[in-house]
Image (cartoon, rainbow, N blue to C red):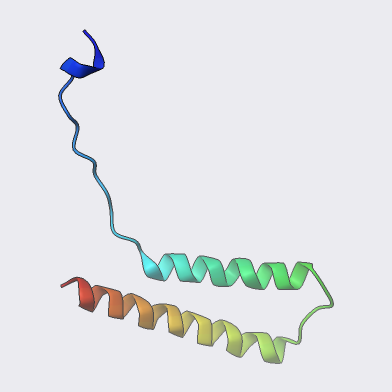
Length: 68
């Protein structure tokens, strides 16, 4: 029995979870920033974190609305 006689398997895909992807990239970016130089000011990084999480939520809501 060769590969020609095996039934074709349907390829299964899943939708991208934009919230998880963008939040992960944000935290990786912030971690790299803390590791590669002088410590950034927490007064600057806190709004960047909150704004980044808000942007990720906004993109996730838009993606969910577009899918429907």
